[in-house]
Length: 477
Image 1 (cartoon, rainbow, N blue to C red):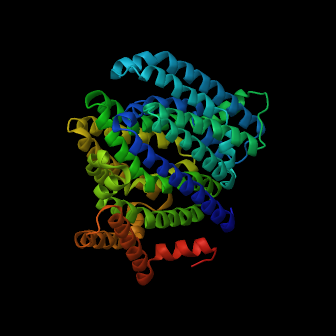
Image 2 (cartoon, rainbow, N blue to C red):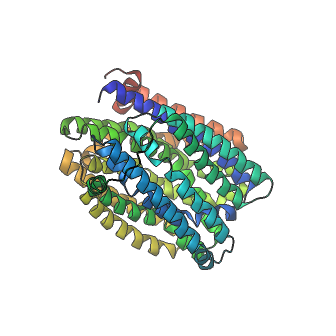
Image 3 (tube, helix red, strand yellow):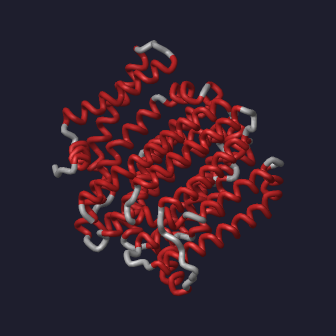
């Protein structure tokens, strides 16, 4: 893959993720001010069930189609029909169990709410292959247009419903409409159409890789969203809504970077996985450039957590600030998880990937259960401990296969980490001196941190900064 194609993919994917996340975040701010934590907590209860159901729709086949460089139209069509059938089956299953879900959480509204959200599974299945093929050929310009249109339309409807007192239903209809509009536009702008065939041979050849990823994804989803069961069952909708707000806020900067990595790094790494020297260079460049942004973002958000939550989401959400600060510590390492795991996937180590997930998520689940005895703060700290352990495991195997493990990755992040620490200290001092109050003070503090960090990178000549600038310009350092 040429450097120019990789650069174009990064730029367009970055624009796509950033614009959609920015618009989505703006919409979530309005909804957070119109609704109450209990509304968000109620919908969050379904995230585990919906997340697992969504995995069955794809079963890891999307990753297999990307990793396999010579897929045929028959392969793609087979996956399409599999996804569609699985989507319908999961919708029927969720509708059937909805009364039991409502009874378990003692929330009657979950019965009709589960039925509506279950429809989302079938809707998204209609265009999963269209999105995968765009991702494989690194076409992110079209998905950006689709994402913006779908997000704006669905967000507008969600805000209208929230304004008129529909509560949690505003969030549910927003999600369903987002998927529906996205599917329509994907079919309109992507000329790919399925053949009326289903090949068992295609399933066998793809499932050898996707099966392990599918099992790994189930483990990850159960762990990542398992907190909803614990908090929702034992602490109530309000605490779940508060924790979910902290979690989603922490994921905003890291989510943008990690989404960019997941969409670009895996196809890019897969295309060069046979050349270890090229792959090592690509992985190292990814680590430097992503952590250049992620480290200061997490540190800055942790330092300004309380004023940020108060001024952006409103006074009713302030109790989310302490959990947000702790989750930012875990968020420091998240992009590194994505990079290291993409290396394993790109090189075809799906079996090893699954075994590592079993080890990491088993410990993570024990930590999650133990932390739940101490409320949402205990759960947040359990995420930090699990994140450190998971990075140690992931980094060990990147060292084994590429000779680029934890020590070398840490050295490549040292300058960005040191400059971010200084930036955070400067912001904390400025916070003590500036007395503007309200949103004005928050904006000033953010600008001080951003400008100071940028100047520090320019003055010190941080290699990660210089490489990122040269890559954006299309030149070499």
